[in-house]
Length: 504
Image 1 (cartoon, rainbow, N blue to C red):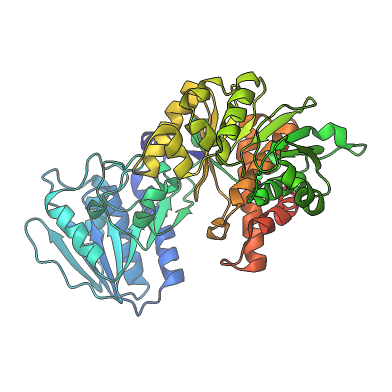
Image 2: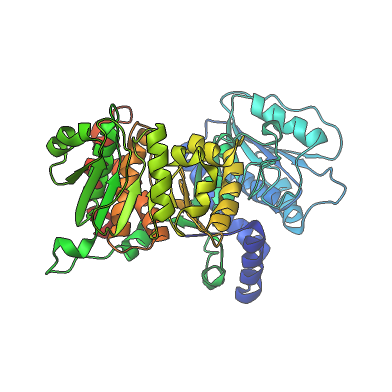
């Protein structure tokens, strides 16, 4: 699914209005009907409804919702704020006039100072103050109103986007300037900001409502942002031919583990094998021989010269891909081995975990990482590589810049893991769950991505579909083991089932 900018969504709306003869009033009616049904499906008419409407089309949506809920027997009070000096939009004026004729609605049009109503905990507050077209942070009376609404214990429902929030970037926005919704009903399209963890406190739970707006105009519109969904991965994954043999699915060298952290090598190896790599060799210290040969007998083992740390990465054979980093530690010997190996590598590789931490000790080494390699940092590893950041949004912006500069694929882990390409395109991954916040989960992901690259998928696709498969496997593990009890080995165990589910 393409994720459009606010400007693109406005252009799509305008094109639909012009091409299909749909009026703004009709679009408001569609949006309000969808929101009303969602409210009715969740909360009974015994809950009083308090509607805050602004002067624009977001306010028109809220006024239409107020009328529809009143018709369904809800007790509705409406406050329409007409204080900006620019008057009401045409649609907002239309729905204001209709609402005045509705029985059972307590309606107030605020044109100057007012005393805010008492908001009780049993109320449903409909937030229709400002939509996604907001250009600057809220200030003055509206900021105070937002703060007042947030301080209540009511259920807050935002239409399209929480008031005060920007559709794309919110780094300069203060938390107190934005509605903290319980539920956000986005109209037709999700916004880029929905996929950035910093904004979760504003959005609450969110859902996109279909109002039949995304027609041919949306399909033809280009966007650098994508939400990767099951249908996309299904289309990309290749079925195996009837006369397949293991040599057709690549060979992978996994450089992983040290004394006390051989579990990381074990989990990464499981991820690779469960996602279909043809042949897997694990390079680890000699102390890892028995653990790996007994726990993952399907993998071959290549012992380092050292007993407890990796000191030399010299592949004895030609491999389709090398995955480097899980559990290797940052001993001086290991850092030097990583530096030497990267300096001679020519093929795209996967670098994760301590592989990234070793590079962080030799920052210039990033310049020598083969083009289109995949690096998979979590927030801490990312900051060690590229300096401290105070928000995920800052990291995402830096990732776009660094991906282009170093010609690397950067997979930034999170609730919506994002895969950043050197051309500026970003894939947000639509699978996964909170149960995956468990030690070793990232090691499994490294194995999956390396396996897919070995099988011939391009690095950007391997990273994106690998992350999606990883997320589906995590959700399957949660369903089996519960949200608190998922282990990384459970995620690895369900990886093959996740692929089967996606392909079927």
